[in-house]
Image: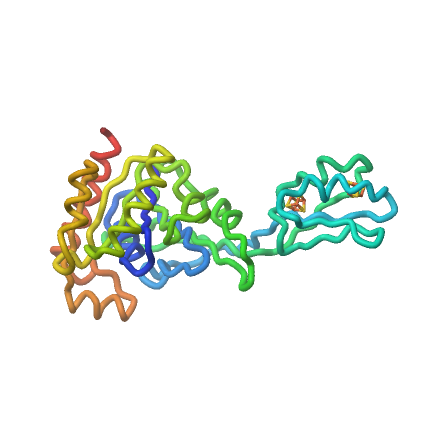
Length: 283
Ligand code: SF4
Ligand code: SF4
């Protein structure tokens, strides 16, 4: 079962929910797809056992074979190639590594070279019951604007026998969509404010386009207004957990400690959340 944990906006507590759920769910697997700023490891404290470079295939033109026909530049949707002064220029920062240019080249003048755009790290962390579970995350290289290929690499770690928790990047752009694709369920973490509602509506729209059922966790549920609850009722979206603000838990968070290690009540809440997700997916 694959669960994406997402939020329309940053700072709602998405990683808090994802990591605490991973610590109590049976046979869990935690994959951090928020590759621009992965921070699940701060709470799960995994042992990293393997690090692999993530590369993107960038075209290399053999000038001896190239006839300067320009077909590659015409075919590139991302303007990453141009024929200038009798030479094919490659703008590697714009290249998405799609391979179209080498496919269309009539002279077979284009080969590919791997450009390192990030890193995949995998290992294991320990659940509250002491059992090990699989941990994985991607880390983008500073300055790399293209994160979906790194997310794809993280998703290759999905084990279909596990309860896979994917911690999505915030927002509703390509990295979030890339994370959600193929999920059985999406859990949105929000807060009861007008900004929270606006971004939740956008995020639910993405999940519906992808035909992924969703549920909601309301964080800091004792603040703000009732609009999130009204919206969920109107749209028939289940609220699976509400977490009021708790000063002690906020303090534990600031020290990089997981809530379920501190509060028996929250541990039970997250166990119930797991069961509710399983029941929602079964529907
Ligand atoms: S691999 Fe794709 S994106 Fe990159 S230069 Fe070739 S056609 Fe353009
Ligand atoms: S398509 Fe091939 S032959 Fe034509 S300009 Fe590009 S690299 Fe050169």
